Image 1 (cartoon, rainbow, N blue to C red):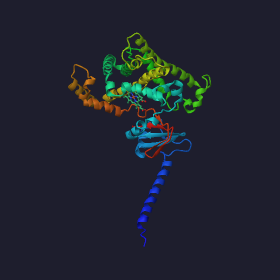
Image 2 (image 1 turned 180 degrees about the horizontal axis):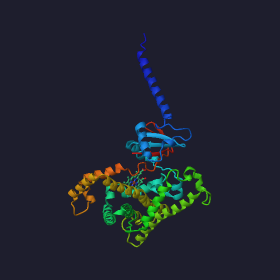
Image 3 (image 1 turned 30 degrees about the vertical axis):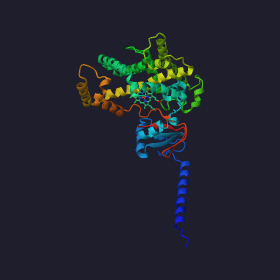
Image 4 (image 1 turned 90 degrees about the vertical axis):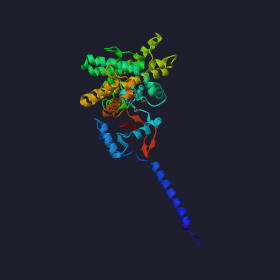
Amino acid sequence: MINVAPTLFWLDLCLVGIGAYLVKQVLNKNPSYPPGPRGWPLIGNIQDIPQIKPWLTFAEWGKKYGAISHVKVMGQHIIVLNSVKSTIAMLDKKGTIYSDRPVLPMSGELVGWKHSLGLLPYGDRFRQYRKNIHQIMGSRAALNVYHLIEEIETRRFLKRVFSNPEQLQAHIRHTAGAIILRISHGYEVKENDDPFIDLADSAMDHFSRSTVPGAFIVDTMPFLANVPEWFPGAGFKRLARECRQTLKELVDLPYKFVKDQMDAGIAPMSFTSNLLEGRILSAEEDHVVKWSAASLYAAGAEATVSTVYSLFLAMTLFPDVQKKAQAEIDAVVGTDRLPAFADRNSLPYIEALVTEILRWNVVGPTPIPHRVTEDDIHEGYLIPKGSLIITNI
Ligand code: HEM
């Protein structure tokens, strides 16, 4: 008698193997989008994303659908990341396809913010800006070089607050600008009415206004970017021209200041002077140095101002915490000098307080989205090319 049992066993194994392979093939061919709220035909999920505090809604999606969720608004795929792990796995580890930025017709194209790192398309130029900035911000050792500038400008800040406390907000803004301009261009700001600080304030105000979603028709209908200024309803073009001029001055004038100082042999060390020293730049290199320096201001000033505002707010709302923080400083530093960076490791309560401020009032709960340049399969989900990635972490 023929024993069929072993033959059947091997046949079963083969069939299971082939079945698993086919299922995998089908799944790989048709991976689904990450989960998310159901949309409506045509308009998709437009009603699911609130204009005010959208990050609270995104956090709810995180609880309901997991770390990666998906919606579609007027044909645009949007992926919301609610975990640090997914954010690192996608935006960092797969940075070559996740680092592009959306095209914003008003602020990016017409005003020209697309040349700053925050809206710069991914490519060689992008990598060059990042390389330059990495030199001054890429490590703790690189940042330590600027401690002295931060300490000097902080003392000036305290003097101003002491003599004119009603102007606290203006002092914070002035100081954040002063620190960054010294780092980026070696420029020492004037005590009052500094032209570069005023210029930067106007440019940043224009940036905030020109990126408000839905504020400009050209953002919904990009072809309108080509209409002439006199065209009825094309007020946005006139506004864009004014904003473009301010931005151009913000980028060009501090850069010219550094070059003039270098020609005169009196330029202090700065991000820009380091990149210019001993080099004759091509037009492209000139653009990269000029705009990567300006990107520092654009990226750093508002974030710093907002964080320091939060510190003052927290100290007003929670006086007990303020008392504990002061007690630690008095015990460690004493009362006859101000704290310095060298004291940092001996001030654990202050360190925790700073971290808590950043957590308590997150500066950019939903930063400028990234854009995916190729279809990707991530954790089994399809992330289609062109998706906008919003981080909510
Ligand atoms: C509380 C302070 C700050 C916070 C919370 C903060 C937060 C952020 C966030 C969320 C991004 C977006 C990252 C992305 O989309 O991939 C960013 C980008 C950036 N920040 Fe900050 N930032 C702060 C201060 C600063 C300062 C002081 C500077 C420089 C002086 C700076 C320079 C930059 C630059 C250059 C980028 C663009 C990086 C890139 O696209 O590669 N930031 N920051």
